[in-house]
Amino acid sequence: MQNTDTTKYIIHSKINADGVIERPDIVGAIFGQTEGLLGSDLDLRDLQKTGRIGRIEVIVNTKSGKARGNILIPSSLDKIETSILAASLETIDRVGPCSANIEVTNVEDVRATKRQQIVDRAKFILTDMFDVNLPESQEIADEVRQSVRIEEMQYYGKKKIPCGPNMLESDAIVVVEGRADVLNLLRYGIKNTVCVGGTNVPPEVAELTKTRTVTAFTDADRGGELIIKELLQVADIDYIARAPDGKCVEDLVQREIVRALRQKVPVEQAMEKYAIRQSDSQKAKRVSRLPKRSERRGAEVKRPVAEKVETVPAKLRERTVSEPSQQRRRAPAKKVESKPKAAVSAKEAMEGNRFKSHVDALAGTLGARLLGSDDDVVVETAVRDLVHTLKESSEIVKSVVFDGVITQRILDIAADKGIENLVGVKVGNISKSPAAVKVFTV
Image (cartoon, rainbow, N blue to C red; front, side, top):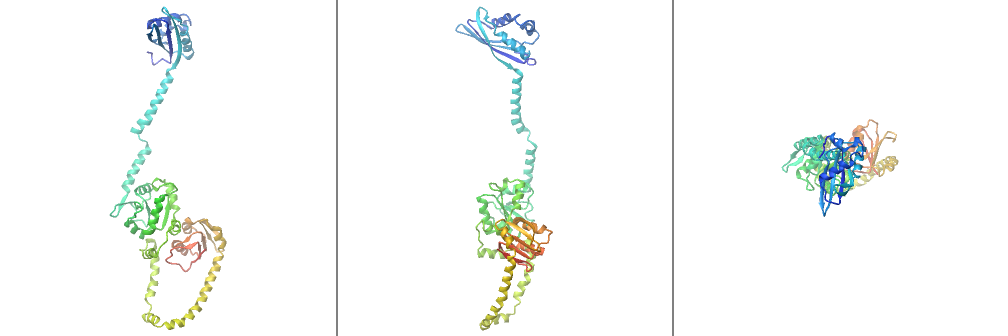
């Protein structure tokens, strides 16, 4: 229809005639009635010879003795000249023997149409071809990382429980809910993990927790709470960590995982939250369990005490059993001995009262204060960071007051650091109490 290299605009117009006319009649009328109308510069014959006007296309139909059609004139002129040429078409009032009317309906910008076609095609190429044939570098990295994570994951026990590659060699392990949680932690370099696969904790995992420092890391939903309750009953866990509200461990990013593990709480502090009470059988199980690797050195200290109990002479035991009258005679002596003990307890109570201002200030804050020799505050921190702060602090600390449970771990660190007084809300499961550390509760 037109030279696509030079055409800029296309003039669209309609023609209505009162009689029957054909295409040659319309083309002849256009050239004949516009000749000399616009001057030599815009003469249609000259413009067509020089290629500035393309071939005129006419589509005409006749019905009931009348003709109607469309006229398309391609132009490589500028906007002004094309507008003048389009307006000249409307001056034609007769085609052949019939009166006619020509009306310009539109002037199409060919370059704008091409630009729109380019945009539509570019959208298709970007959304379809690139996604299928050319994956982005991030997708390639994720695919490689996923394959490496799956290869790193190992299995433990007869039931093929998914776990990290360093789980068997590590002194501390992280117990999670499912296989996806193990894979997500492997993604960020945490390789001492093992999963329980739901609320039915495998016996292999329960047995494994008896010799390791265990952190239970669960989702922030009802299922995660039920798993924690079961672990507290059938396993031996030391800390509890939860995912942020409304999230699962398998969906967390590295920053959220690190924050959740840093905010873990000792199991003694979580007992009240999850409404778990240790029965006598559970306490006996906890006392009779195998010592964890971090506690074996403390177990060696308690061995001489047991030997002293066994070396009591048999005659003395028989005399104690067979002479109840001597026990009755010694009863008043016991009353006399109880007075110094009461006096010591009163003295300790007076010593504990000197920390009352710190206890009142920390009540309900889950905070901790490290006090110097004059009971002045040296360092103030949160209870969850107390163990780390005690280990890393280089200040001289004589007393520690905190709004939390006094655990065996805190007591051992206090003895190593030469701390004289520990003041907490209550005392947890303490297997050995250093003589150099005085313990006070609110």
